[in-house]
Amino acid sequence: MAAELVFHEKRYFTDNSFQEIKIWKVEKSKDKPHGFKYSFAYIVNNERVICYHNAEGKGDHRHCRNEEYSYNYQNFGKLWKDFKNDIERFREGRL
Image (cartoon, rainbow, N blue to C red; front, top):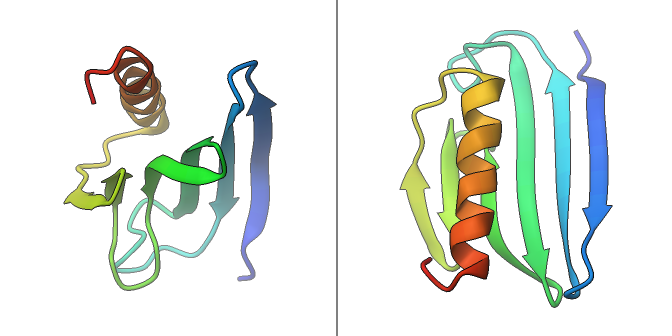
């Protein structure tokens, strides 16, 4: 099964930042047991400062600035909420 893009959104903000979300349907695998490949990224001044994704060989994880952390994916609703909360915390200087 080839990856099928099922959602893509790129939203620009007035502070020279944007968020880009991509979700693909893929075959279930060790790295993608839920059957989706995803990338939720927040970019500021052309620098990725927050990113949740499941890259090949790494499984679900998140990036915050230059650090990488494991992420316990539960569902897209929770992922969306966690991503939005990180953006808010970053904008408030708490991240």
